[in-house]
Length: 209
Length: 129
Image (cartoon, rainbow over all chains, first blue to last red; front, top):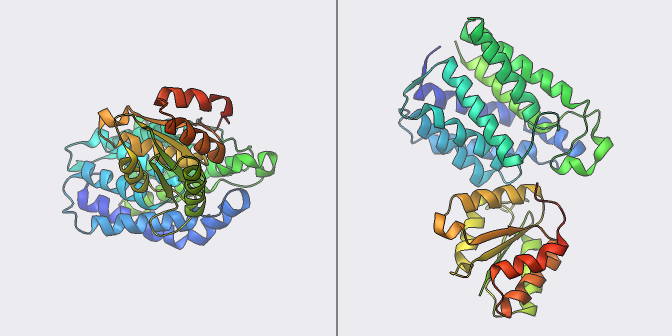
């Protein structure tokens, strides 16, 4: 796998479509144990990303990721704004100056994104958040690279690990975000943020040849 | 005089708290940043930055917020500002109404940003992770 900035924009646009298709579902998940705005917030945010990237010439990958982060931060509104915003901005660090990226670059991007989310939310794995989808996905990618698998196969393992992580969030109590006000009542319900993270990884998997 | 920024998920809460605090201390620069730019519930980094700028002086700015993600966006807003300014902006963990009134009164009698932080300490709610 080697993809250029134009492809990165294409993938981000597809993420916007996929998030929009799932906005009702995401808000429903969020309404059960949170404030019920995750779907609409994410949909608004990624629509703004698509708009912002329309004028981009698709050369500078780090620039594209930074713009994505800024658009999310200034339009999402809920906690996913600063969290995904920070994630995309941080993900640009390791690909500065690059016009093509491969699976190893993607692993580094995801590592920095995850670090950014942990820093911004002061959260770790096991707190019923997007980290529970992203961290296992990153582990799956690194394992796949080690085993010398094809990029597409690696991304498949990543999205599967993310969805397993979403399942795992059903079994634990939320200690972060609005759901933390519910304590034990949050058990049995999957986390909306983990779900949107898994949807994003699934879209990336589908978009890569 | 220390400026005050009230950040809430709700525009009405932010405006209402500002109104209440301003009544106690009409001369203090207070700015409200509530809701998203398109009128939804939420907070917006750019709105928070603008609010900070509007009340900023060398004496600094105290920022008071309501719920978790308002804190994250407030942190981001400060990180995006000029480093010298950023140092003089303090996010304080306190109940939004009582905290705003107390800091407005403290600021109006010429207290420094450190003194205001100290005055708000007993109100700490543990909402800053």
